[in-house]
Amino acid sequence: MSILDDTRIMIKICKLYYQQELNQSRIAEIMGVSRPTVSKYLTLAKEKGIVEIKINENDLLELETKLENKFNLEEVLCIKNTKQIKSKLGIAGSNYLLRRLSNDDIVAVSAGTTIDQIAKNINSNNKYPNVLFVPLVGGMGNASMDIHANHIADTFSKSLGAKNMLLHAPVVVDDLEAKQFMMKQKFVNQVTHKMQQANIALVGIGANPEESTMVASYRNELSFEDIEGQAVGDIMYNFIDKNGQKVDCEWNRRNISLDLDEFKKIPLKIGVAGGENKANAILAALSNNLIDVLVTDEITGESLLAHKY
Image 1 (cartoon, rainbow, N blue to C red):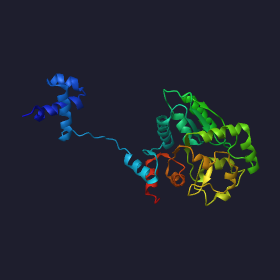
Image 2 (cartoon, rainbow, N blue to C red; image 1 turned 60 degrees about the horizontal axis):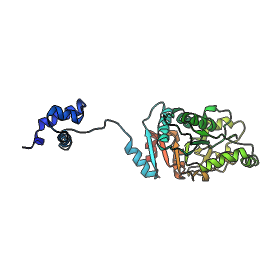
Image 3 (cartoon, helix red, strand yellow; image 1 turned 30 degrees about the vertical axis):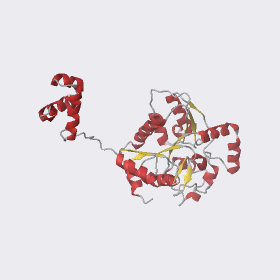
């Protein structure tokens, strides 16, 4: 009988390795066998079913894979549902950005509470002095400074030792003529040129316009009647319809942001959004290929998967 047929020795070696966490060299000394023999015992134990390697993590890999396949996405990251959904999305989004980030990248960032959470949760021992963060959209009404794209770009740059540019323009101007004038200004044109050069975009996806912080900030100054029944959400504060196309409305004509057609040219577009109320807006963004990577939550992911696409 071969020494490897001794089940008692096999079990003892497995207990020393898996339960007592001794390395293979130490086990070889204890058992009076060679280290390669210990390795063979451990392999045989798995083959015979004596040892089963089980990951006791209720992961969402299957859901993520199905979403990737259904929507032809580069990657999907789903978080478990939690009461602190934006904070958890922020952590997941920051981890993903760090995984993809390298020096010389130009990262264009939108505004909003979710992107703000990514900026606040970014944490790295590495510094990126050649990375440039640029805002994708102008400032927003009376909303909290934390969710402005300028503030978010600045937060990222300070956390990562990177550079940033600021877009000194409102999110919306008085009329089309004012927008055309604003976009021609040197201090705006320099930033929009860098937006177009970005190789990474990090954006949130807004839900129903009626629930938007942005809309609330301008409700006393601007009519939103022309988006009713059309807009399902927004991206970079551009209202989009169910097909992910810009709605023909007064707001979009006066909005200061990167044009959606230019935005689509950015090689890696990361969309971070969660909550069941975001499902229709996310679907719209996906239908127009506005997102390459999606970071969302489990319930929203299941809702997207169930949707006939």
